[in-house]
Image 1 (cartoon, rainbow, N blue to C red):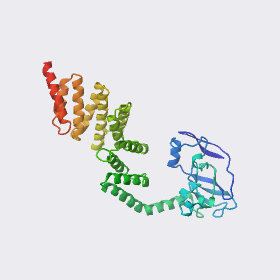
Image 2 (cartoon, helix red, strand yellow):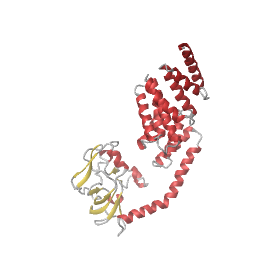
Image 3 (tube, rainbow, N blue to C red):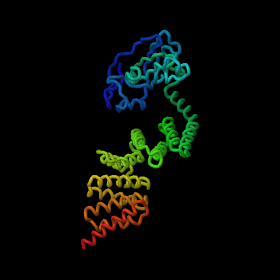
Length: 376
């Protein structure tokens, strides 16, 4: 029979595999009519979950029973059925309490030896162990379209309750004042609502909570940022977080990482687009600022100037402290290249901005003016 098999990350193949055979009296064999592609299948496809080459994929399925062991009572040959993604024994401590997902002998379809070596359902036929517990008979006369419509109606009827719980969870995060408790709420929320409509603000709260002035946990902060990017590669908040972290880090290779994350942030922000709003321009300005300062640290002074100039243009009138940082960096770069007139111009602007860089800008401006006077 034909089946969809994993070959290597990024490679699957439809190939001939042996037909399944009943090996236990509680087994059934189902002829598959439809099998879905789940996010879990994509984890395997992208190499994040390891399985053996040649293993049949899939764990979501509808089909017709074509064979059943003598102990199978709940379904019979000819029944159209819907199957669970995993098996359970129905007898262990967990199963007796209805916690089938914790079953001592659970196996998951299509996930290789790590989860029970149970071939998947993206095939013409599949073996279903403990069929009475794993399979459910579909109502007679119900087509796939009817079943899909019924499921959607049921989902719609409980959507308001789900939305209420999701919003309540988000409100609990925003109202929590203790950083440790807030981070605990965030971790529970992300597990309960992995595809939440509040994903971006919750991620921002997490990065703020783990950052300076709160928990100040750099390792968890970076780990959380990378986790966000794994699920959403275009998260500006995570890209800027990691760009800033690596930009300030002195370890070998950190500068290159900071530039990579910053360039991706600029690409995502598209500050030159007609619909670019203040937030996107600020994000791009901060990213150009980071690149410019990394170049300064790397003694690539000439390369830093266009980045810092672009940053200043995007940040002026939007974020005074980031703007002051860009101007100070420009003044330093111009001064180092002996472009004293340009240095004086940007530093004169920088000293007008109250903040931590005002005094440093004034000191540098004094040195530039002194050098210009000597040059005359």
